[in-house]
Structure formats: structure tokens, C-alpha cells
Image (cartoon, rainbow, N blue to C red; front, side, top):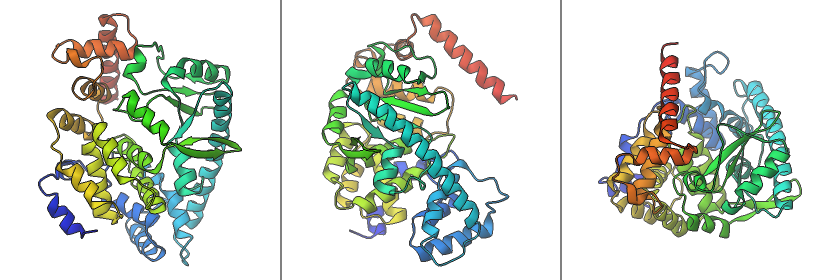
Length: 400
């Protein structure tokens, strides 16, 4: 692999994503403080010790308000510091966070297993996405990776049967779920919550912005086994998992999504020889994710010296993004704001998708028609009332 400086020079004509992406507390790019935490979590013991002592010279884990993105990395920080021979500052606090994460994840794992058994027992294929799958395959420790919810992928044709099963198991839909067959074409998932407050997302597509049935089927075809509490289900293969991690992580969020860096780092270090880079590049291009994947891989090589194929980075970097792709990228990387998801999905449908709405891309009322479909509204006036209500709530929050 070439030196980082050489790689940067080769890609100097296309640094759009790296140079213009914001570095703020809600950004997918870490601030200097967050990068310190990442290096403590991921470096070898000697470097981890140095980075942790340096971070503690400027921050107090006990008294400072730590951003949530950094906070979610602390169990992994604890695990990595245990590999060194030091008595690290705040090690007892880190140990407590690690143990709490382990306990909370055991509860989620048990709930996930019960849902999987119910779905598989009804003949519905399942695939576990995100946290649980990543923690088991790449962290090898349920205490090292906090997770907010449970994410399960099922075939699209099984969505309504799965919703009925979840309801029978005590999971209630969150939000205004009123799915119909048309709405499945405009969404990738829906959310549920049980009586204990656990959250579950039921997916029928893997990627937020690729609702292409053929590509989703390819994820299923390449899936690998995942064992949970005596049950065998599926997980994404390493290349597909890396694509999912990066595209899900590279968007601004009120919770800093910097954990994608740790997830990617551990995946590549664990499966360096098993990542099919050509498959990754092919799926990236076909799913219109070249901008974000190029940005992610470039960053990982530049800042964490990961052994990522230079040819793949150059291939993605040499692609000239369309105006629609750059606009979607800018929306996702911008500071979180009202309507950002609706606008982003609208751009996906009208300019990047081969779906049903492409033919109406020049209709000035196409956005209203799009919202009617994905929200399940019966007429346009319901869209206007929904938008008015959301705007009023946001304005009220600004003045509180």
C-alpha cells in the first residue's frame, strides 16, 4: 500500500467529502477530543495509555459533560486499557460502564432471540443488522459495544406477517405506522417498542437510500451464519457489513455517529483477508453510495492507517458524482434540521432511484405526492397539516 501522503495526492482532485464535511458535535467526523477517545479505544496498549493520559489532562470524566458519541466508546476504552499494565484514571468508572453495557445488551440479546424464534418459527427468514451482529462478530464482547435497539431484516413480502407476529409478542409500532403495500416501496424499516421500553426496528431493506429489491436480495445471498442463544440466524458478510456501517454512520445526527469508525476498524482488523473489496466497490457504485464510501475509506486510511485496498479507494474517488448525488450527500452531512430525512429520501427517489417516482421528477408537486405515499396520508391536506404541526413544534422548541 502506498504512503498516506501519496494516496492523498492521487485523490487531491476529489477531496469533496473529506474537506467540506463539517466537524461539529453532531458530525460523523470526530472532533479532536473524540478522536482522542477513538485512539484510546483502538490503539495498541502503549499508545492507548499515552492517549488516555493526554485526554485526561484536558477533560474530567467525573466532572465534564461528555458528548454521547464519546460516551458510547467508553466500554471499548475500558477493554483496551485492561490490556496495558497501568492503573488508568477513572478505571473504576469505566468498569462500571462496561458492566452496565454488558447487562443491558444481554437483555436485548434475549429479547432479540425471542423475536427471531417467533419469526423463524413462522417460516420468515431473518438477518440481524447493526449492533448485536457487530458486537458478536467483530467486538467478540457484548460489554464493549453499547446499542440503542434491535435491528432485524426480513424479506419484504413477509413484512405484514412479521408485524402481526411482533404484535402478538407484545411489540407495538412506534409513530404513525399505517403501512400498506405502496408504502413499502418508500421506506426501509419501521419501529416497535415493547412494554419494558426496548426498541426494535424491522427492516425490509438494508440501506437507507437503496430500496432496490435486487441489491437487497444480494445481501441475503451473501449472508453468513450468526448464532444467538442456540438459534442460528444470519448476518451480513464482511464487505456488506462494512458498506452498511459506513453509509449508516456517515450522516449528521444529534447523537454523534462517530462509532462507525470503531466498528469499521475492528471489522477490517478482524477480517482483513475476508473483505471482498471488489464486491464492496461494485455494491457501492450500484447503490449510489460512492461519495460516502469514498469519504469513509479515505478517512480510515488517512487517520487510522487501515489496510484498505488503494485501488478501491482510487476507483471510487475517480467517479464523477452527479449533481443529485452531491446534493444528497450535502443534505446528509449538513447539521440536523427539520425535514432533512424527507428531503433526502425525496432526492433519492427522484434522481437516484429507478423506482416509480422517477417519471414525475419535474412535477413541482412531486414532493407532496411522495410524502403522501411514505406517510400513508389520504390527501394533500393531511400533508400540509403534518408539515404545519412539525414546524410549530420545532419553532416552540426554539423559544423554550
